Amino acid sequence: MLESLLRIAGVYRIYEKYLSYQVNRAEAPNHVGIILDGNRRWAEARSYPRWMGHLFGAKKAEKLLEWCNDLGVKTLTLYVLSIENLQRSPEEVAELINLIEEKLKETLQDERIHKYHIHVKALGKIELLPDSIRDLLGRIEKATKNYNERFLNVAIAYGGRLEIVDVVKSITEKAKRGEIDPSEITPKTIEEHLYTSHLPNPEPDLVIRTSGEERLSGFLLWQSAYSELVFIDTYWPEFRKIDLMRAIRTYQRRKRRFGR
Image: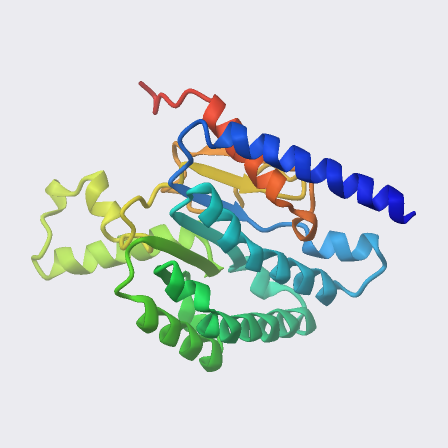
């Protein structure tokens, strides 16, 4: 058994080096968005309680910082909690909130955030979250607000349609005050009011969704208009660095025309 596991590990390392060689020969996507899907199904397939799926999924997300740094990805946006997720059973929502709070505490102390100069920001209806979560998010954003080398965006209590609604409300209020002429509103005006307006590159070059589902589920609807989409059958807790590299390799092999 041990010999078999060592053989598998050896093959994995060889394949990882092979993929790394291929990926490093071309330009990496600057901005990658990932829909972290399949935590509950992963747990159910193993007869684990659902919360264990979220726990293992959160541990997997921790490794992404290192992987993206190794591969040259400067901006990472993670779809952690949708606005619809908050409609799940009170027990599951409480488990999710507790787990998110623990991970935010760890993020606040994570030396890699400062080592790599990562600007961390939450995207979503933060006002719907408990005070403890909002406080932690505020502290993390304050501690990293001056970093501009890399960006980590956490889409939490997020909905793409609600983001656009918020943009419309914001622009409407400015128009009422005479700050914006409605006849001069352009796509750039919209972009300047999106949750991602702080980013140098708000549009993901590549969007990855795990678990085999093939839809965006409201993730960055405006920003993803010309993103390359890659859907992976693997549940999120099983996601590996080679899965990320294969997705990037797929992106690199596509010809991006942006409708032209």
